[in-house]
Length: 259
Image 1 (cartoon, one colour):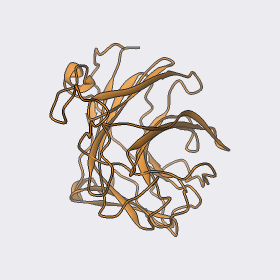
Image 2 (cartoon, rainbow, N blue to C red):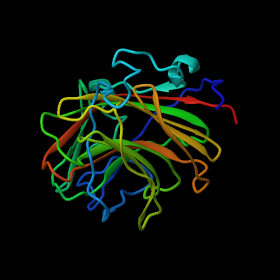
Image 3 (cartoon, one colour):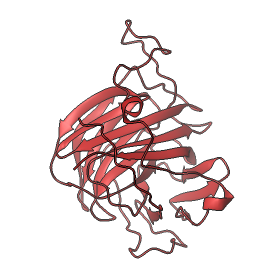
């Protein structure tokens, strides 16, 4: 994939998109929140430092040979969190989930262990890009509690979801507004550390119909899908085992790729 970057400036305005409910006080955006209920396999959570039991040739302190951010240089756009950005990010507090901006980041909480996917979307529309988020799971997480980025969302209730889980697995799905389609079913990875209080850097590369997902700079898999050529991006959370499962998103960056 090409890594030549075009710098642009953008201001991010997130819209709260809840799986299963609408936020009580949605942010001031042009599109309304959308309620989506996940009916497929329960979700999973994320974890930080790479655990490489399945790859004896790589150590947790090794550097990925093809970490996209190393080749792309300065990002096109980077989010910052704190009191000065409270109006930039959509916040909500509903019976299903909560999103709030604190000095340490955007904190997402899945209140119920009912496998409902909840997401907040940004308003810039991206086509060919590399996106990264850094997220830290809370003190309690188990099984398929999950989080990760959503990208190329042509509508608030559509897009590709890449998520990692508390039991050290990842998945990629497509949501068409009515149902999920598995692109990559739950797959274990030695680069995902299971358990609570873990932090991961999750990356999503998209160029035309060719896409790839990364964790901590390591390539997990590539796939081809032309359903959504462009769209908004955001962050997702869902809990299957832990009521009150939380994730703190401390960083969001993207790099434009040439058209």
